[in-house]
Amino acid sequence: MTDLKHKINSGVQECHILVLGAQVLLGFHYRAVFEKGFEKLPSFSQYLLVGSLVMMLLAVGLLIGIVAYHQMADAGEDTEHLHQIITRLIGLALLPFAAAIGISLYIAAESVIGFQAAAIFGSVALATALFFWYGLEAVCCMNRMNAFVGDEPGKEEPSGDSPHSDRRQKISTVLEEIRVILPGAQALMGFQLASMLVEGFEKLPLSSRYVHLGSLSLMAVAIILLMTPASFHRLVDRGEHTEGFHRFAGRMLLAGMVPLALGLCGDLYIVTYKVTGSFAVALGLSLMMLAFFYGLWFGYTFYRRHMATTDRKNALSMTGQPHESG
Image (cartoon, rainbow, N blue to C red; front, side, top):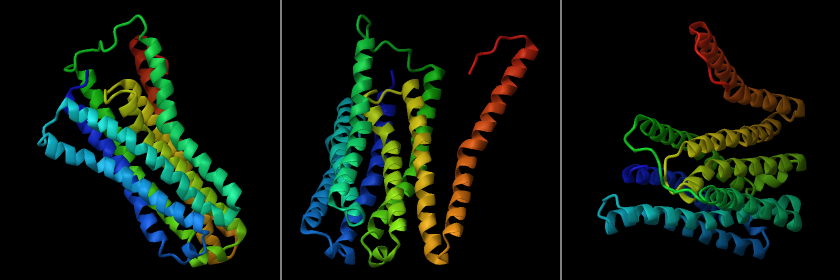
């Protein structure tokens, strides 16, 4: 089993991932009330923004509470109870976080698509966050419990062998890679939310406002996917460093990069169109940038993986050794 020190270290890394997103959205909420567009919002939406702000403060308070507990209650020592506190507080913090995302997207969308459509829009965002942060984990937990029927759970290889050491390093690396991408995505989402309340936004063509709303939706999906590994590791694996979690985190990381590129290029279209006034130039530049992102992130890397696999197979064939498929 994974030793306590590495469990807690991973928990702190995951807490860091979540706090980054919470702080960006918290900044949007504090800034939004000073934008001219805020005064034009219905009273209901203004009160909702205050409710969303409270939700974000609850999430931030729960996550930062982990640090306070570690330093005061445990005097900086790594204890099993601290590991349990990390798991519980992360699990609790995700709920107000999901509520704040749904409310924020509703407020941002209301001026573009109206009350009813915005309510559906925000509800879908909330449901998506709840599914990836709680529902998916609940399904995996149920499947795992069924797999353990008749078996003795908890039997694993000794923690001192090299495969476990390599796995710990791989998991630490994938969490670091998420932290490379997530801050930029969250900062852009905060900008996208705030820009819908500035005076110049309502002067954009309706088509550009729809594109911006679509980009905001894609950025929200990217952030939800990138934050999912932290929830999965806490709620399903209880901080254990498993090969299954490493694969899952890697897939969520790559999945999050798909809507991230679309969201970036959607807002590039808006900026280019506003500057040039040309639909063709704006669309062409956006598609070129999208091709660059997908070509570099997925095309070239897939090609390199394919070539490496082919080289290994050829090397094994020359030595007469059997090779593994895939």
